Length: 241
Image (cartoon, rainbow, N blue to C red):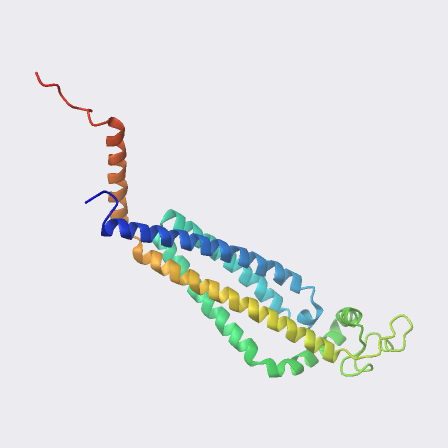
């Protein structure tokens, strides 16, 4: 049988393909994690999200950082062909995917409570963080919450010549929040799909990755073949007398 053919060569090619795929997928998820991290930081400046809950941008920042770190471990484990590292990567990523799924389901199953939560958040901001309400009113050119006299900052912002806003903020605030929620949901779904692909690729690589003693044996044989090829076929031969 010619060199490089047969089941062993096929398994080796399959393993190399899995390794390449794991590295590429994790490079992609690393960039996605960085993008989510940046978007989470940016969300701290989105008034409607901060008003509703600082937990939303905080969760995006934490998730983005975790995705980036886990992707780095996945790339390193695949490149080093380190089975324990790949198993750790797979386990942690699986837990992260499950946590993201639970969080997403919980968030979208409570959309009917958004009105109530925003109302409570506006009352809280009016009492303790009036500058946030002023920022929202300026951003959306509105005054007050349900109407232009409902917890407005300042109280006369509807008739104040410096502001003169004649519409309340509730509808615009609710639409902006739901729009951001949809965007976050779409991004989360895409990340989840990529992560599931990464899980499957890592699982396949773990399956094809030979035990350490087998890898050592292959490396030793490869080294011996390399040394033998450099010596040449006449190395150690004796001339006939």
